[in-house]
Length: 300
Length: 300
Image (tube, rainbow over all chains, first blue to last red; front, top):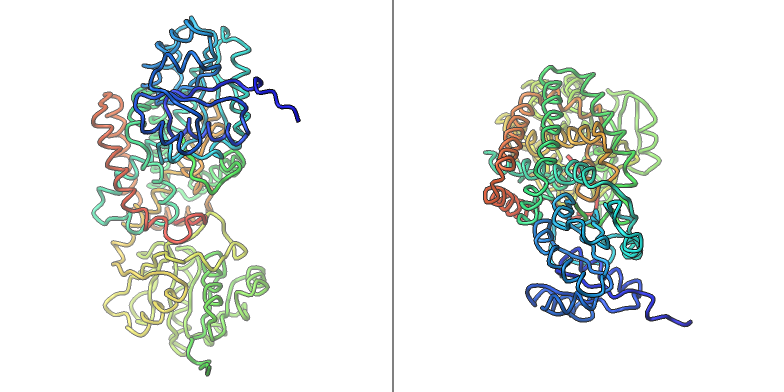
């Protein structure tokens, strides 16, 4: 078999953590035929990623890495991504105009920071993660069967979009497209507010005089697992997607209050109808929520 | 080895479902040296339990089964248990005074139904379950490492208490004792309200115009899993532990509202402190919440 070494683009990861490390691992798993390189503000996580065989080399000098890359993947929380993006796009314009994408879980703040001058930037968000963080927690199966949402605008170059799509399908993910506003509202409901609910529940249990967490079973295990997520990342998300999160938290509070009133009224029929509808909806989404590796500890 | 066939008591299960079937399976796993028998209002689940090798025989005649048993385990939701209990205790008094225990997840309504005339009744609650139901979902590992809370009163006979404790430790569980009121308040917080929160979250997502469940990841998988629980059983729990559940729901709503206000104020430091505390508490309880079989789908 003749292998064309030029067929795959050189991918550069800016910041190496759980998500970018897992993407690098997934590309390595696919026998990616080009170097995977990385930049970061500090050496340790880059050294670990190199030692784990996730990347081929790294540098602490951002212009060097940008100049060498065909595709640049920014792997950082929303606020850090928004801060880094203008500099990266400036460097990209000044070099070979590589494709640039990001993985931040909020897109409004990112698209705003990117501006409109670089049509080879493709905003992205893989719906996968873990309550663990750091490149040492990376694993190549993280994206298998998972959704990656891209939010291109009318100005996004098709060739750039295709390059980012190929990266993710190679990693085992499936691609969907959404508008930036829809993405941020949907994710506030499907990911951010579930985290806020897990935090609020854990806090309630912590303050309870009977230490109810001592008597927790599988329900509590699942309902509090993501309360162990990275506090800095989730503070960042809470602040950068604030309006959409507040809207979804209000909708959540309203449902909770409605259910409370049914229980207070001891309205057995209405309670049963409420629960039955939830069961049916949850079961309809079993395939999406438990894709390929239901036993793995995925989040987001 | 000489085996004394009289060493183990004959155990009768009144109602055969996930929990009682799993207990029967766990006793079979331990090579219980006495018959396991069952009664139920209808034949099908008893026939399935017999076909699965969980019980040795069954009858649709309650007095026959009670008369033959040394230990009686009532396996039914709270309301059904409360309804059945007086008749069972009357039959028990009229026969050889077997030990009677139950597994209902609320103890107040049960202890009230039992009255005070039968000191060989031991109220119990295994903290284990599943969003699946029925005897066909039973598995003998369900109680491995799990807690079983017993709520004996000062009048409970020690020999009866010991017999019930032996049943559960044989099944792999660990025993704790609590007062009835503390049990119901702690379980409202650790189990019942997490279910209400999962139901409310699922309902919010169902009514959302962007179908956010289509974009769910592992967080949503875990935060909605128990919304597929049995609607009848949870209606029953909501009604029979109403006051304690309303109290815990109010505490939950207050925490949620507090977190909302921190986000609305964009108070990054307070948000981070809130999240960090939750992470620490959740990690402190990892051993309790993920006992022996973290991959199994346990609930309650």
